[in-house]
Image 1 (tube, one colour):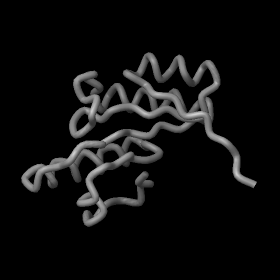
Image 2: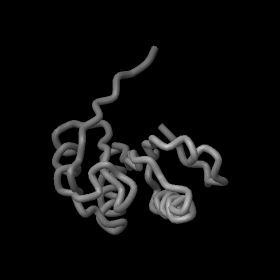
Image 3: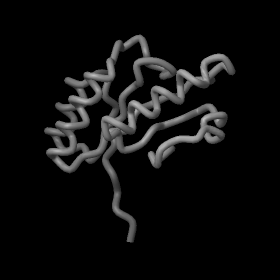
Image 4: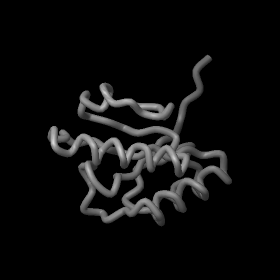
Length: 110
C-alpha cells in the first residue's frame, strides 16, 4: 500500500523548518539558481541547514530547479545538482528534460 506524503512549500529555510515541526513529511525549496522562486535568495548553506534539520525529523527536502535551462547554463546546472547531492538533498524537482542527459550522481529526479 502507498503511503501519503504531506509535502509543503518552503519559501526559505525558516518556513521549511516550521512546516516540518508542524508535521510535513517533506518540503520543497527553490534552488539558488534555475528555480522559479530563485528570487527568494536561498543559498546552498541555507538549504544544507534545512536538510540537516529535516533529516533529524525523518523528513525530506526536495530542491526545485524548475526553469528552462539554456545550453550555455547546462554545466552550471550540473555543478549545482552535484552540490545538492553533496549536501544530501533527497531529490531535485526539474522542468528541463536536458537534465536527464547529464552524467549525474544518484540523486532522485522528480
